[in-house]
Each structure stands twice: as C-alpha cells, then as structure tokens.
Length: 255
Image (tube, rainbow, N blue to C red; front, side, top):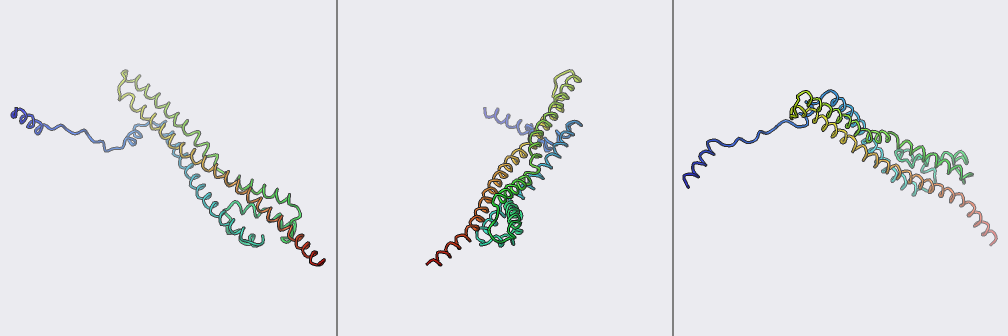
C-alpha cells in the first residue's frame, strides 16, 4: 500500500497538471476588437451622448451648489438689514442665488414707483414682478435638463439597436458555418452584449441626474415664492410704519 501511494506521488510530481491559462487581456477589449462597424457606430454615438450628459451633470451640480450656498448667505444678509437700499447695494455679491433675481426685479419696480424711498404705491405690481422674476429664473435653471431626459430615454433603445444587429450577425454566422458552433455566434453575441451594457451605462446616470436636478428646481421654485412673499411683507410693514408714527404723534399732541 505504501509503495502504491509513493508511485502515485512520483507520477504527480513528474507530470504535474498544468494550471488553467490566465487571460491577461480584458474581455471588454476583446469584445470591442471583435465588434463590427455597426456596433462600433452605436458605441460611438453612446460615447458622445455620455460625454454630453456628464458635461451637463457636472455643470448643473456646480451651479446648483453655488446657488444654494449664496441663497443662504443672501437670506442672512436680507434679514439683518434695516433698509432695502442696504441689500440693493450688496446684492451683486450673491448673484448666483436665484433669490437675488427676485429681489432685483421687485426692487427695480419699487424704485420706479417711489424713487427708492417711501411706501410702495402698488403692491400688486410688486407681486407680479416677483412672480415674473421667479418664473424666468426657474426657466434658466431648467435649461439643458431636457437633454438629460432625452439621453436617459433614448440610450437604451440605441443600445437595443446594436443588440438586434448583433443577433442578426450571429444568425448570419450560423447560416455561413452551417453548424451551431461557438465560433459562428460569438462575434454577434459579443456585439449584442456590449451595446446593451453601454446603453444602460449611459442611460442610468442621466435619468438619476435628471430626477435629482428636477427636484432641486422645485425646491428653488418654492424658496423663491417664499422669499417673494417675505419681501412683499417687509415692504407692506414699511408702508404701515409712517401711519403708525403719525398716529402716535397725534396721540402725543392730544395729551
């Protein structure tokens, strides 16, 4: 028995089993190399769409971040100020904030009414100015978001087109070879897989970014409406102060 085990160990040492070959090349690179002109065209279109969508995503992310930061600073300055003229003098420092556009439009309407001093003559005109400024600012913030929605909706179908063409190539390979071999169907299947994956990789970030940015636009719209009401309330309170001062003065004279 011991001699048999020794013999087996001897043969294992002299004829070792070769390890499976290690594929150092990338599977994705190999599939790209085997892809036909249609698949490469589809991948090129998806690459352009991906670069364009990421340019929009990064640009919107940076602009919304600046707008949020400057809005908080502008609100602190606005609530600490005693007069509108003080805010008007420094509003340019907070320009990335959408609230500044609302304030500038309302203050410009107020200046046309009163010259910059005294109570406002027409609050309704100021309300319309605030609504117009908020609408225009929101429209500017939503620019190019429709491109993200379009890319997110169309990219899977572009990838599906490459998938269909890859399957067609696979069937053509079967017809040429006459037998269902891996060599016959592999190029078409690889095209189908890589274009499908590429379409999803382009669509998923675009859809997520579109939903996030749309939610942020709704949040900014609500903030602009709230700020517009706060600004108009402060103007109405300023309009009531002269009447209160006059009433107190009259009471003092009667005494």
